[in-house]
Length: 64
Image (tube, rainbow, N blue to C red; front, side):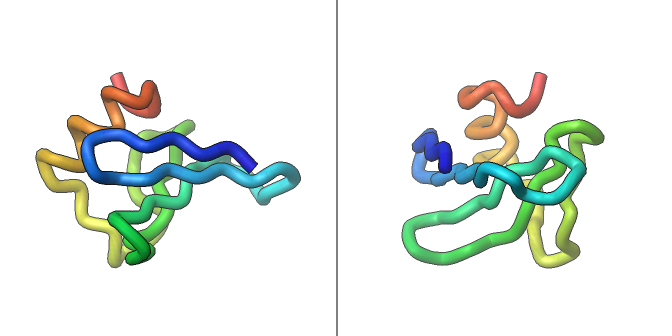
């Protein structure tokens, strides 16, 4: 398992997880959803890409 913390968000990846490559997004202990790294979009409808989340994804290297 990989774990990165950026700007109040936690991004987790798991070995042997299903495709597409994605991260699990948390804010504190609250699971927000999964973000598709390959296609640069949410995998779950519940994950809203706010400006704060967009900045954190960029800071951690998941978004250009």
